[in-house]
Image (tube, rainbow, N blue to C red; front, side, top):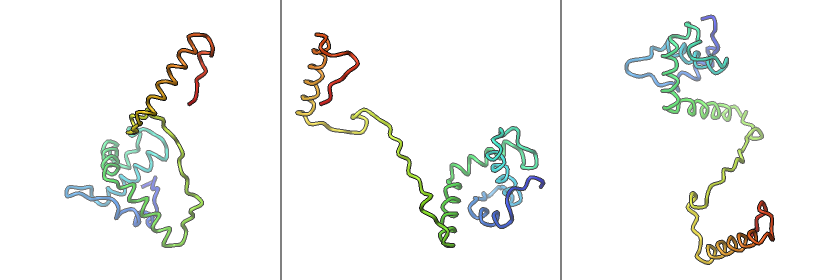
Length: 145
């Protein structure tokens, strides 16, 4: 194969994580298809542009979806982390935490407000609306309670 992307050692690590069903793929096709998936994401090319040496593009695409749905890639990642930990090569300074926040209405989160809090909020909203109607405050400003 001219476009081989995995060394034999890398393949020996990956192979046990890939499921082999009763009707295929055959072991030699498994590596070919996995390398097709690597080609797809390494190049950013379309599935239909995949070179024939990786097999039929539709087969490789279907295999990728099956592996994705079966959690194969998560298992590979966990295996890589475990292997690195066994070698003493885990560096926690590379850990990143995503602090993205998505705001939602308080009802979406199941928040329950006491009657007194709800009454106070409604009163503050009414006072704000009254102040706006009298021209006492600009329309784009809000009162925080």
